[in-house]
Image 1 (cartoon, rainbow, N blue to C red):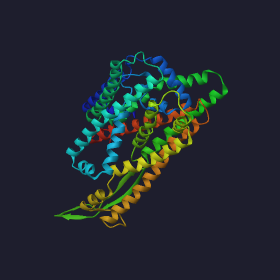
Image 2 (tube, rainbow, N blue to C red):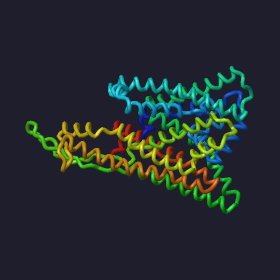
Image 3 (cartoon, one colour):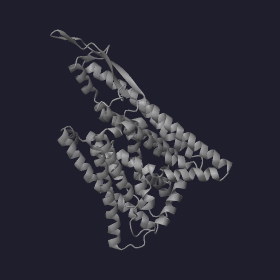
Image 4 (tube, one colour):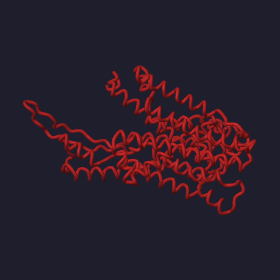
Length: 429
């Protein structure tokens, strides 16, 4: 990884992209540390500390926003509204033929979808900003409830969501990697010192149980790290044979190659999509008063990270989004047509529909394996966290580790791809 970064730094274009990405992240972190007015931030931090101990969905949403909710900063909503808007538009594109037709219009269609996603992000940011204000009011964390102060708070949170969306899009366009993932990565990484402090407090306390729990947390983290790296590099290679063609006095083709299908072809996006969907109950919970009835308490407890219902739903959504995202990325019919046009074929299968059917079946099997491993890695921390209050930090941080490792590997692959396009000396050897 370090060698790849050193090689990238020697290339002027890549160096500019890396510096541009770093500057965008600096702006993001500055905004994520500027608190908004009219809020008792100390009491708010204590509230989220209590929610974290109970495994509340709100504490999970706080992790997803990089701690923005617990600090009530300008970017308190982080990239969450933009991710939710992207999911909604992608699902509607599959469900509504008119939207699907727009998406297939090429560059013009993608621009329209991107524009609608921005508008929807602002709407969702407004809804989440309002729900956040309601929560602050219900817990008496506001210094004033004057209408001007209320409007300032809600519009600030909404504007922060729009700015974060703009920053993410500019990273994707002018920087390195996927802007959404990079912003999410930066928010989670910023909580690293707090996690280290938690480990230190558990070990320095001298309590045998706390030390054992800290060791368990480290082992679970290593387990997640190992599996993510393994999944990121594993692939199935479908053999491809090209027929010989005689053009004049030269013979073309005849060579053998392969079509690689990564086991984790969808990367970390199913985890991000699932996390975003499961943050919706936390948004609804913000609207509820601090004093709740037994029914509301039971419903919200179902979405605590350590509840069996949440764990099962989490795993099922990961599998579902893995298949959904793979269907968007891969088109077996198009791959089969391209092979046929270039004189390629899969041994044992005729060109055209038989080849497309075989690729579809192979892709379904590979995605199933990838989704299964991704689901196992995601729910193990949740299961471990169900056995201890201290180990709930594992449940909260397990998804964070998956996202951080996945985004880091995907970004390195993007850098390597840029180096390969420029035929960097020493990299292809």
